[in-house]
Length: 149
Ligand code: DQA
Image (cartoon, rainbow, N blue to C red; front, top):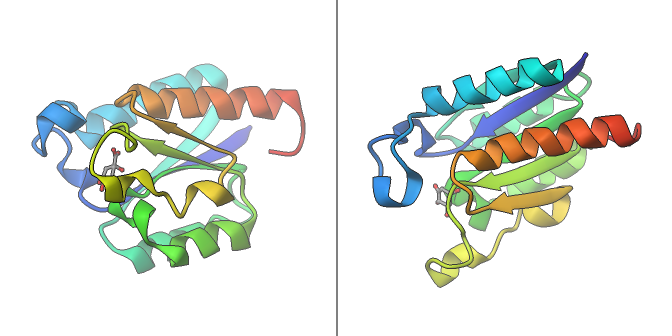
């Protein structure tokens, strides 16, 4: 059974109340339940982690080495400047997919740059919570396609 770690960064614990017009009305719990249901259908084991702290996210990525076959990560605002999270993903060599609820390319200019995306397999942005399900689908297809993920 393949294992996937889903990481959510700062302020995503406030989903459901935070800027609902941008991020929707679902809570992080709601979204994680949807991901867990989908994962079961794919026969993927999924774990969840959320932190508002850069170091906590980095520690979790380090601990993922040897335990997970892929990472799905929404780094929140760290997307735009955390070289440390980027380096952690690169260091552990676990194929990772970056997800954003909003389309980071049609918002403020500072959001249109991701320092994480270049070390990821790919990025999904702008589909709301469906983005996490698309990322899970992508990992499932990649798992089936070859052994590189
Ligand atoms: C976000 C986009 C980021 O720019 C923002 O800082 C977030 C959420 C998204 O999911 O759309 O916290 O990652």
